[in-house]
Length: 393
Image 1: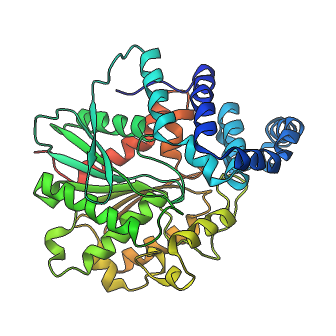
Image 2: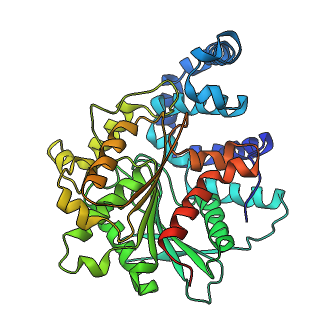
Image 3: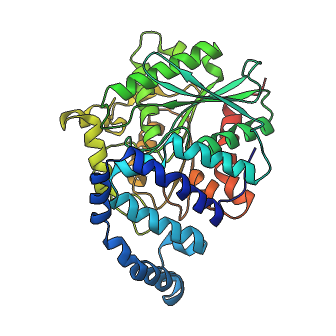
């Protein structure tokens, strides 16, 4: 099941689901403070349209940012709004945007609008000892022949697997189309900061992986994956596994990562003219997760600080990594450095750097692009990488 592009009606319905949840889940005083602090946003009634019109239509194309050069007007406008919100809105507000009570009814509305009373691909919630997640499968009564163990993004402070459900269902659909008999995804719903800090999220990630290994039996049928902060947790998981005595029997077959946040605090993380991420806000989230400045130097907290090639060689999945990211990302310099280190130490790395793209574009494009070919491009690239690493039985 792969739904069509987000419509303006979808946007209105999303706001309809969002408004009561903001009132229910955010203290009214905090909500008023947030509104007061973002009053300059209303100035964007002038500033945002002016900047949008100026860059798109009044200056030469060569002077436009790389993303704007290739983006549609709708994509450009949405990314400008997200850029402002990411830098200025409280994470408490952002958390509600991506929460289950908003995301799940919104997905059901989109399904209904496109003729689906129920999803042809089933999902169910799984409760584990210290966490929970969502299990997505073509046939719940047949053992899976491949499982993607997924961790969602959101800066460790926002996001939920329910917000990613549409993306994950599309991923399962394309894996089935590629020839796998009964592909499945287990997406982890880890605790967000500041409700918990390291090592809670890593422990939950380990619990989720152990659950998947128990279900599948053979780790060579597992691909770990995630985007942004979810990819951070996956990389931490791999470094954790490498320290276990029987790591060879625990390693997954492959890792498919989108825009991984490799280093939580880095002087190489700079804002770009195209990307919607804000380096200062990211560094704040990273410090909250670590719990102290000293822990930012711990590779299990911030995997990119690990320069030990032997450790990374042991941590690498048996068939290596597939990486998708955009050339205009805040994270791009750190990621390129880590990829070079992996390759220097014999790790197999398949990389797709999308020219002009912003952070986590394979996820965002599922909602913002016009044609199915554009919307599915990133996911199809991931599926192609996975198919090369995990043979179809």
